[in-house]
Image (cartoon, rainbow, N blue to C red; front, side):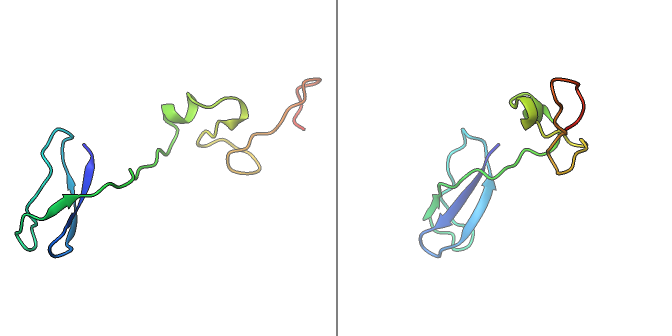
Length: 88
């Protein structure tokens, strides 16, 4: 369920509400109790972290950044040469 952001035109009170997509927007302000509440358009705020499907399935080659992998820097893996397979 998405979290919707609301602002009252009358008193300026802002709030967030977890609602179903199919739910009707709120209209009554909990602060001033007037029917002046408007739903705002805001960006989704989430981050996928960890080593789940999104981390491995949609990246290719050395772009994969698996949790727990070693390397000189976070997200890097040692490069190998095609000739002998040794780390460069």
